[in-house]
Length: 86
Image 1 (spheres, helix red, strand yellow):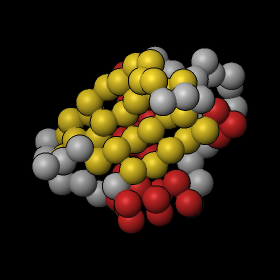
Image 2 (cartoon, one colour):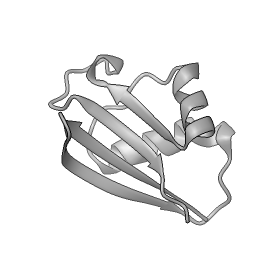
Image 3 (cartoon, rainbow, N blue to C red):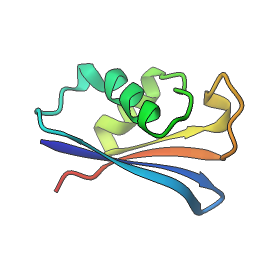
Image 4 (tube, one colour):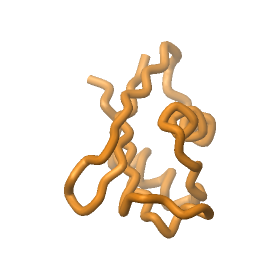
């Protein structure tokens, strides 16, 4: 089981957040699917996922998407995914 804490932020203030919990083992090849599910649950567009995003999450347990990583306009500065598995 693993958890990913997703949050949208303006500056340093959290605007919305969501705890994604999956009962399976974490599989880095499925990261895009986890991202799509999280964005769907938060009712927001899915950002463009680049190789440096996945490397950041796998290496540092956190990834930050800027508003420029979204094709659609968004009302926040950052979208952050953090590995919350204890």
